[in-house]
Length: 372
Ligand code: TTP
Ligand code: MN
Ligand code: MN
Ligand code: MN
Image (cartoon, rainbow, N blue to C red; front, side, top):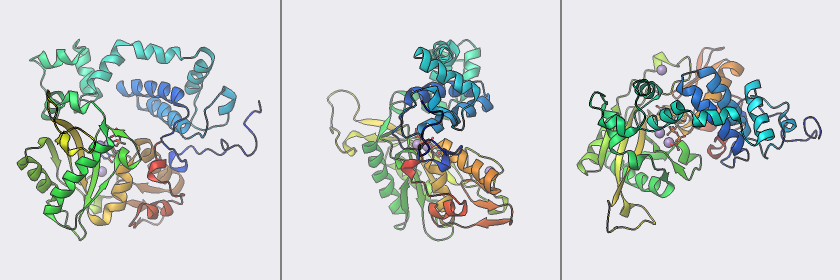
């Protein structure tokens, strides 16, 4: 085998940045990326950010390759592969699996934290606290009266069965119709855009994400509270966490990647009737005729739309690398609100996602190619 593939190999010139790669849902290296993501997750649980990102970056790079990696020679010269990652990949090629990964998968702590963090509202910190108290199952958590659950976690446990199941495209479409109708009552000019995993072409998601906008300055004020009230009066609001806008152009942009932005937004659980979903039976003899579904709504000011759309379309790894690329390669700061050029001290305006890619000197990457 040649050392680094033939000269015209598509594996040459693979960028270290996800925003310079096209990553579809067709992952040819799932065995490797699943293994690396287990290690990344394990490091996330112990809040060891450096190693976690290292493994995530490696997995993300491998997802973009147009063919399966068949030997350790294949990946020579590719970016994002540190010595630890190389050792894992070598183990998988030589033994069929990585002992390091197997160890994590059978580790009681990993298994327990994985279960605990699968509850809506429970992050690594809370999961770790419960683990240290000797708790090992969700049943133990809900029956322990000394544990204080917040409002989000109470909803998370209450609807656990439903919201731990994947949301289908048909269900996402049904949710879109409901939100569209309700938002249309607030203003006939509202536009609703699917973001998140469904915009990237995924068949299933853990929630449904939407961006709502109304043309005209400040016209989005009050939109989400109105939508939430409407859902409540229809009896289909199971949980809502509304966050008022704290958006302030004078304090832009943020210095680093933030999971949270400053737009008006809400994290919801809504009741989706089976009859509202195309292709599902209206009535079942036994059991409920509805399913609880997690829904995220964001309502940015219309002139921030392109930045919000890019930021909420993901994947998380793609977003991280867009920001990292902007900072390290362009001396610019990008977040969900704006793009700032530090060299000229100016904000760069954008009406579309394409505008932002042009400002960054990047080829446009379609949403379905952002599954990094
Ligand atoms: P998610 O809904 O968490 O992820 P996803 O849609 O890619 O995957 P899934 O199918 O499992 O739902 O987040 C979508 C994007 O929104 C993600 O790129 C991160 C971004 N995001 C923000 O920018 N700010 C926020 O406050 C949150 C919660 C998400
Ligand atoms: Mn989502
Ligand atoms: Mn979401
Ligand atoms: Mn901020």
